Image 1 (cartoon, rainbow, N blue to C red):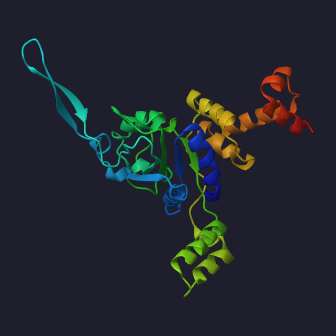
Image 2 (image 1 turned 135 degrees about the vertical axis):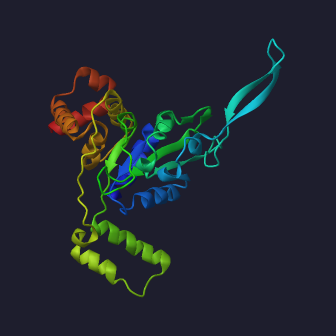
Image 3 (image 1 turned 90 degrees about the vertical axis):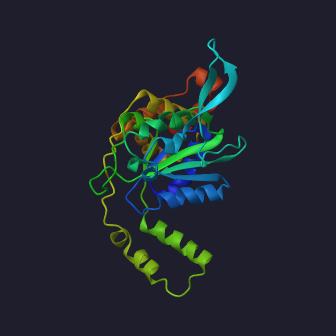
Length: 287
């Protein structure tokens, strides 16, 4: 997916469904910059966690401590309960909105990643609950031999995300840099921008852009697609990549073909009465 298509995907999917999004691309493609700028543009809070900076589970969930209850058991011993300290990054304002950005996710040790399972699905870390206005986005490099220190993502972790492979075409990068020029008041030498504009992707990147993310169809992915179809309005040009990021490319293609065939059929009486928007789309497809 082109990086300039991510904004509409974030607006629709992150905020209307709460499905966590995982961005994958080669290094230095602009993933982190996009997420940070998106949060700033939408006036959202922004927490930036880095996988390699969380070598232990306590870096995420805090440190356990005992709290007195003021009660005693039948033997007169003080009763304590175990609680966990709150890490300074965890948002506590229940009225706040923002993005928790887990960068370099696959550099997080394999034995620490499971700590995130419940957090990614429901926003909970032990007894701490993420405020309703916060969403989770992650990013990582592709699962290739080029990235030393990356740990494979478990199937359980994969099913918790919508995975989007991100690319930054030359024209998008040049447009971004020209806007950045205005902010930084760069006027001395713009020839590198002209060079990339003329020669395009050939000079901007030598990396291969397609890789197998190993995404498998599963019940959770199908449920997420059902949520997206009913809650979101996505441009047709991004639908395949969104579906493929949940159930894999092969199943996504089969589903899109099936869906198109369904819309070729005349609307039923129930659709006209109870789902007029769907009926209207069918009529438009037929006409």
